Image (cartoon, rainbow, N blue to C red; front, side, top):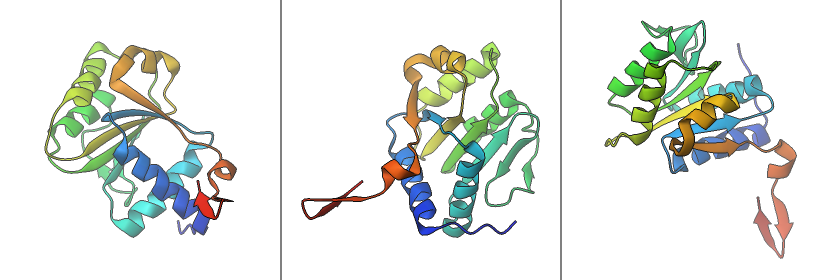
Length: 164
């Protein structure tokens, strides 16, 4: 599907991606009003920039956002996808959508290990619209990000300077 984003949407997706990369923790909980629109913005950004962004969905498994039709084998279950992420030795942002509570203890343990792990490559795991119970279970290991409405992210002119 060919989808063209406006300049404002491209800027918003790039700004969100920068916030994800600059986050203090590896494990993030992202809350957004329209996750499908957000995923489409990130998909277009990944195609244009070549960034390694992956999406895991409950029931369908994991795929690259650049090539949604190419599925990563043996990652249909959350536990399998988390093991794949743990074994990865490359930069990557992994979006996990459709996580349902309660999480299995092994999945929770894997998320905690990923949050605490120290590595030489940049890695971010983003829980999209995760239920409050899951975020509460993760405690201090997760950083919550709220994506503001597009109107609040428009630049404003204040005292001769542009502010976001």
